[in-house]
Image (cartoon, rainbow, N blue to C red; front, top):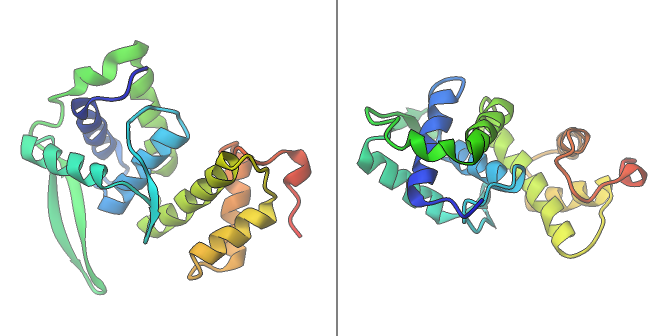
Length: 193
């Protein structure tokens, strides 16, 4: 599969929003769903995610979001919350405009998008921040040729995200490991001390 075109990424975004449990996603949720699609499902989206305030981030995702809004495949509204503001991204009047771009490779892309949305689409931005950071740390260890223990991943995530308690981080690491999302762990590294 070749690197996804901008139209394909816009079609993916529209499908994510249409299939989200609430039919609406925030910017952080969109960012993390694209990250999981690229890193967990191996879909070559062409993004270069770097660690940022709320976990893995690539400004190109926001550029694609802006393009999708301009084309009417999604609509983005500002939402006021007691603690500030956020965004609600919903299907636009042209949501199906590039749907044909997802039919490549025998609908593999469409099904992978749907799997990611089913697994992660109902999580809050905060939960996705933590889970995506766990995955990022795992990939960081793997990229360095190191195998890591659960404890090493938990400690690295805790250093990056000190506002999450160690127990919560450990639970997310274990959950992601049990689902086979982490590359670094084998049966000998599944012990928590």
